[in-house]
Image (tube, rainbow, N blue to C red; front, side):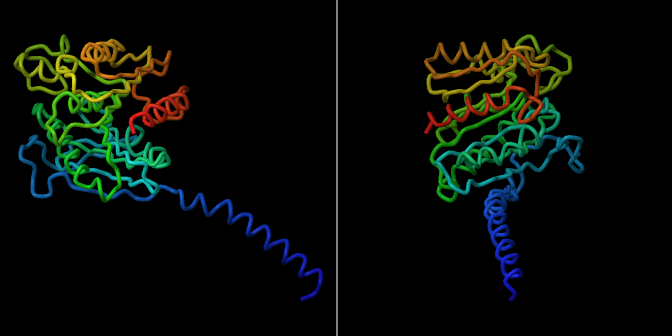
Length: 293
């Protein structure tokens, strides 16, 4: 090899080595495909009455769910925590993108195994979503050794926040979450349900007992798990009073709660980059999660 060719070769080799040093870690960090776990492989104990194929809509929303699943994103370097996310969607669909899978890479980077719950819509069977959420918690508890975690939290946004708070207020020894994370959650059905009127969870004529059961602020106990709540002041869909009501109930029961109110952001921001307080939210949540270890 001529001296000049050797010098060029040497420089190219150094550039290649430098580029590989940059690219390889990024490739290793790239989000892997999730492990898909069927909640009820032998059939669910109760039927929500929905038939036909699932409906995939714009923005990663999924409707007409009759075969619920967990999409599990294991952490490469587990820190001992796992989170099950219940995306919102008004109990009409599951916003599986910005309130679901879009968060996986970030949670994994913190060492947290993250699972998105694709739960069934109630379709006037109010027990169905909670049945799926309890099943998801049980499944993940049974996989704690496999995924190397000891603390399991439930998380949700909007109607998914209601489902998460319902898990945190109605549980058995096996289905109690260790912590709860609620984003702009629907909390109460008081004054939202009228006899014979359309609603998100119940049939046309729900009993007051059913309404009370699914009003999370009415079911807080002293062993309800610690909570992190985030809400925007200008939310036009679920008013901030829902979060304030739940926070007051938790405090009255002596349950630790941390609430962050952002001056703007509207509703349903999830993990959208358009939410201007996204980095602040991530910092506040990651700090809180460290304290739940």
